[in-house]
Image 1 (tube, helix red, strand yellow):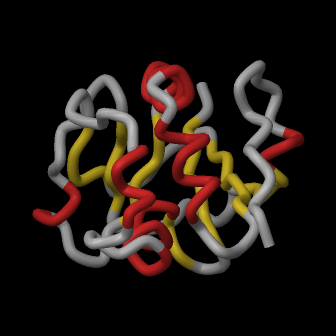
Image 2 (image 1 turned 180 degrees about the vertical axis):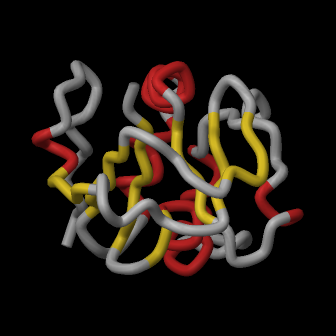
Length: 125
């Protein structure tokens, strides 16, 4: 099984979206509904999260992935791991860990992720 963490530079994609698209940004009017994802990350400051396979599918099909890619300023990459360690929380969509499992992690371009929905939209720079 694989787990997926989308990053922009050194930030997780959700942090990058907060940085690059503030709450009052008009682009937020186009944001797809993300209420399906339990919002538990703030209970674990400093932790990192990964999508499960089911979560990845939902992230893509909900439109959130493409919207996230459209509002961040830098290139999106994905870290793929096989075994999360130090799990603090998990549900069907996500796993939150206290540390990165560096030995098994590999970072790849999103376009190289073998998935039908993984091609992000091009930023308009």
